[in-house]
Figure 1 (cartoon, rainbow, N blue to C red):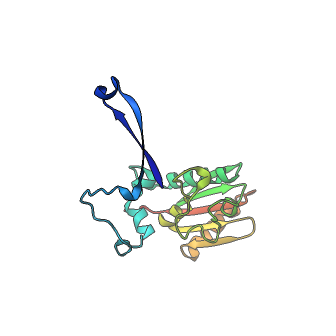
Figure 2 (figure 1 turned 120 degrees about the vertical axis):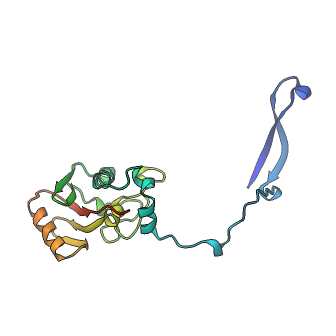
Figure 3 (figure 1 turned 180 degrees about the vertical axis):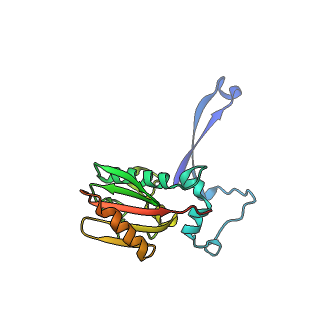
Length: 190
């Protein structure tokens, strides 16, 4: 990649400040800067423990208050709306926070290839929401003691135990006309 060099001639040279085009082409390899900074190699790189990173850097994703059930729910709701939901609700019942939608946003044909099978396995980009956006379903996994999903035909436990699954199944049996429900029991992790 080559860049053209531009400079300003001084008042003595031109009588005023005028942009001056310097036809010399500078290749990046021609320029060497030594700021006393060590260059990193592959040997310096370590894999990132994403869950640990999210827990230790909550302010990067949730602001100064850190993760809360309402902040996680609102981000998931926004994602569902962007992906095609027309009617999305947040329901709180006891310890449960639930996102209920008329559209199965988890299995929408999004650009990040996220689906109900892999949504909770890590952070996924969310290009439909803009640059540097990510899907928030993973945060429901990280900051919960229980996480369940349901569609019209099936209830699936992602995290928790059989009593959580039973609670969630009973809770969702009272909800009609939905295509997808995601429910979680928030826990604060510091």
